[in-house]
Every structure is written in structure tokens, then in C-alpha cells.
Image (cartoon, rainbow over all chains, first blue to last red):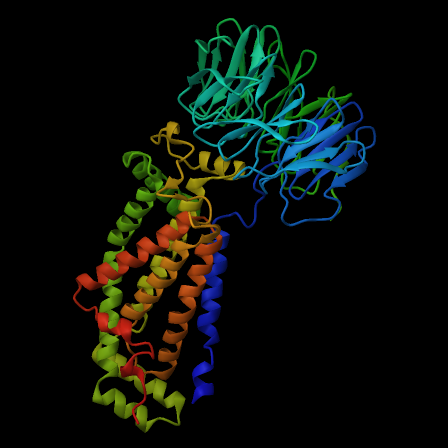
Length: 360
Length: 259
């Protein structure tokens, strides 16, 4: 009798397991990466953070120099754009609530910082001997560059997903609590703050004496960097996720409605616009008289800054939500979720020079 | 298709309720779960009626006699059972159909909660592409805090005198409320295989949902608890609930073979 009562109806157990798989599968979390790659480069090396590692890649050849951690570690998830410091460190935070400082020369770990309560999504910024790291636990941490020791912290009302902009003694911090903060870089004390009415998810830009910030509230806003007083604003059809690239005359940016556009820095008036054919999440890269847009549909487009005329267009095998980056004489483009992680394109023609795919 | 018909309406309803309820996502989950329970009430009632009819039939003399008579011949027993179903006008699928219809709703609700919380860039970008125009973008990102919990993270309660031990209060509530719901709402059955299946479900379902609650976002655990409690209240409102069943740990006496 006892043995009989312990027998499992495998159909019922199977149904429960199928339900479990369906439930976890329905979130999509099990199948898709949590974010897109983060990219940075110095004169000789590109650094790409994606999933369980950050890779150092030779800019000339596309060959891997090192990876960190050297062995796969399921507890690590790195997506933030790495910061390359003056003294040869590569610094980035991970989804494991840890900031890693790595020697750029060989990928050895220099120090870690583990006091945050949530993941790091955005990149870090350098302000002299301080490293400023934004965390999803709503806090900006200012760390000593040499040791990673905490110097000061500043808490906002929502997650911080973007690196702050440092300009002299002022730190401009975008927060998802709808507010752009200006802080004193030495103390972390606020100088001013401005509620922009919707979340900010990218680093603001200083151009033409203005501070430019995109928001999820369908718009790009310009502010006086000394006081936070608004100047002009541009309304868009979709969220502005990536902030603009700007030269002395214009700001270039895209939005989630798929528009790429250029507006005058003087008054925000439209100069030109086009339909990119997919969500524009990434900030464009700005070269000499050319602006490079990328879309979630995997399309990279080169446009003339003068009139928006198409110069070339290539389609890659996966979404491009990471900001394209001009490094050396390459246009570096990181692809999310494909076999190829990084492609080096010829900025003049869009031709692929090399690609990098991590070893599986 | 799945996104357009099930997921998008659910996500946007959840966000709309969140906007109405002072940007409180915990309250929004509870109210949304209650609304879903209300919308699916006709299906739930149909399932209960079907279960009751099945119970009545299994308690009848004709059924008992049939079990004894064809004890050694399973095929014949099945044929006779089908005949009896026809005679009394009972459709065995009528009990399963409401469950089958409700499954996409349960999966959709789970997906909507997880997607609305959007704690990573990929999730937030996906959410942006699912939001209807009438939802104000100013509610993004959602305030994921409810009571002492972050609904986007697994829940643990840290007490002042136990600072290093996180107590998974919601997980415990999920396990207990799922067990109670199964215990109260699973009807006794004369069929040994059915009784065995009921026992397994009563044991494994709380453990499985408890595992989800322990490891996944606590917004989901809150949904499990709210859904279980509302199901019990709904069942109690029909006047059929027997709270004495909670104290019978050896299974249902009606399902036990008599000596």
C-alpha cells in the first residue's frame, strides 16, 4: 500500500513542468540577452562588454587580445560601455552589482567595488582622480580611481542607466526619475536640478553653449548648463533614448518612431529628417560632414550632415542599439544577439574590414 | 498574434490601472488580478458546475456498480462510463475547456507583469514597442516599490535582529495559499487515479509556485498570492467551501478506500 501511494502520475508532473517552462518562456527573459553590448576604444584597442565577458580586440586586425573574466562565469553579466582611464584601466559595472577595474594592458583585475544594491547598466565617467558610476539602485557612486574606495554618493529617485557628463567641476547626471541633476564633482552636492517630465536614459551633451538631453517624453530639450533653465525643445513622435551627436551648428539624433533628424542648435528648428526603418535607440556617431545612424533593425546608415542625403547603408545580422563609434579609421558597430559581436566598417563606404565573434 | 490579442491589451490595462492607482504597482497587480478573475468568472462557474456533476455521478449507485462489475476489464469500463456520460448528458470535456481557455490568460498576465516592470534595457525597449498611445510616457519607469518590497526583484524580509538572514515571506505565503486553494477547491473523487493526481498536484503545485516566487520577480509572487486568495473568496461565495478540509492532512476521507 505504501509503495503504491508514492507512485507519481507522470502525466501530472509533466504537465506541471511544461507549465513551468511556458511561464518562464513567456517572459522572454530566458531567450533574449538583457541588454546590448557596450563599446569603447583607445588608439589601438576596442573594448566590448557583452554578456559574460569584456573583450579587448586589436583595432588593426580584429583579433582578441584578452577577455575578462578569462574563464566563463555564469554569475557575471557585463553590458555597460567600458571607461578607459588616463592611467590605463578599463572600468565597467556589471549586472552582478559589481564595478570591475581591469588593467587595459593584459586584462588583470585591479580592484572591484561591491556596495551597490542593484545592477549597473550605464557606463562610468572619469573626473580627475574620481570614477563616477551610475547604478540601477538610484545612486551615483564616486570612487577613487586608484583603489575603488567610495568617496561620496548621490541618490536620486529612480534607476540610473547612463554615464554622467563631466565638465570641469560640474557633473550632469541623467536619471530615470525624470530629472537632470547638476552636482559638484568634489562633494556630490547638487547645484541645480530640472524635472524634464519623462525618464532620461543617456548621457547629456554640451554643444553650442547648451546642454542637450533626450527623454522618453517624446522630445529633445536644451538647457542652460549653469542654471538648468530650459531654452528650446523639440517634439518627436517616439521616445528619444540615445542623446544627440552635435557639431557647432546642429544636433543629430533619432527616436523610437524610427526617425533620424537634424535640428538647429540655435532654436531647435528642423534642418532635415528621414525614416530610418527601425527604432533608433543608439546615439549617432559624427564624422567629417557625415553622421552615422544605427537601428534596432540592424541597419547602419551614413548621411550627409549638410542635407541628410544618403551616402551608404548596410544591414547587419542583428539589432544595433549600441552607439556606433568612430575609432582610428574604422566605424565600430556592435551587434546584439548575433554570432558577430563587433564589426569594423569603412566609414567612407560601409564595407566590412573585419568582424569579431567571441569563441563559443 | 499572441502579443496583439493577449499580451498588449494586458500590459496596457495594467499600466492604465497603475496610472489610476497613484503609480502603485503592487495595488495595480492586485486590482488587475481581481478584474481578470471577474472576467473569467463565467468560465470558473462552468468548471465548478461540471466538477459537481461529475462528483454526483461518481457517487451514484450505477457508477459504483459499474466499477465493481468491470473491475478487470478497463476497455469495457471506459465504454460503459461513456455510455453513462451520454445518458446523464455530461460532457467530460466541459470541465477541461474553461481551464484550457484560462491558460493563455494566466500566461499573458504573467508576461504582462514581467514586461511592465522592465528592469533591463531590452525589456524596456520591448515595453516601449507595446505601449498604446493613450498611456502617458511619464509613468515610465514604473515605481516597483510596494510596502518593503522591490517588485522587480525576488522578495526577502530582513528583520533588525536578523540582519543577515532574508526571510522569503511572499514565498511562504505563496506555498501556503496555493496549498489551501488546492485543498479547499479540489473535489473528492471516487476514481483512484484521479485521487492520486489530486494528491500530486496538491503537493507539487505549491512547491513549484513557491520556487517561482523564491527565484523570480516578487511582482509575480504577489500575483500568485492575490490570485489564490481571490480564488478561495470566489469559491467561498458560492457556498461550497468546507474549511474543515484544511485540517485533514491525510487526503480526503471520501477518496479513501473503506476497509
